[in-house]
Length: 317
Ligand SMILES: [Zn+2]
Image 1: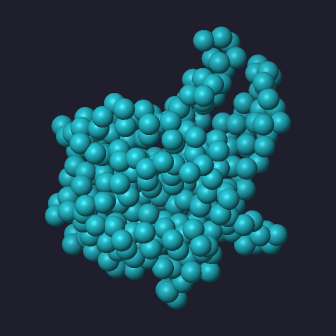
Image 2: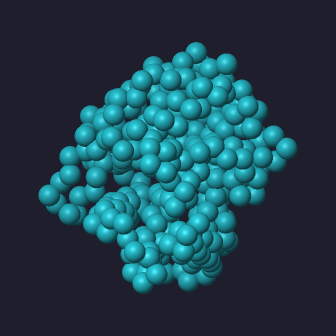
């Protein structure tokens, strides 16, 4: 590692590990490690020896040209699917309805809470990226190789944060006074050892930026929840901020059954989201060839918006 890489690594590590405050407006308490899906009632259901396997972004300084930007990594239950998000009071108070049995994810309020938590998490993740990149760009020890690109990336991330903050407000208002402004659909499948929770924007080619800065880009939601008796999937969007892509996305789930579930999940994980994981056993059953293809397609869809990903079933035995 040269001195430039060392400095980037130092900043990135500091920003990713430093204590952050609770993300709830007006709360100054320190954030604890919040799980996006409940650790004991949900994630534990598919763990092996207290472990799960997740997609993790590789450290940017490790990126080589034409290399994958994320990888599969085994992770302990305590750290799985979590980040410093809220203080313990807000974490337990706000999400009590989706943490205490009986868990009912057909319920609109529960669906809103799942979507709220992942929206907060996405804002926090972007905040960490903004803090890291701001320090890198301003560092006197680092000569930027492509300052315009770095600055454009930082600007893009800030725009993304603005959209998410608008969605956060929309969900908060809906939780407080439900007006049925979000559309969610609920599906049940046999046991399948994966989990996910994500807010995502449709590929850029399908997103038509409004000239009105008050109007956020469309966003979709997906929650993949492994319960003891099977897999539950919730997909949805805000009725006012929806486009053709998101409607088609939901429609595709209506046609999904136990036979084509693994194919459908592979597509979603490859195209739409990086916030997902699987059991170590399931991971071990994936073929090396499929993992390599998955990494390649994921990378291509990141650098080539609108890239049509060939059919791939990551979970085929
Ligand atoms: Zn708090």
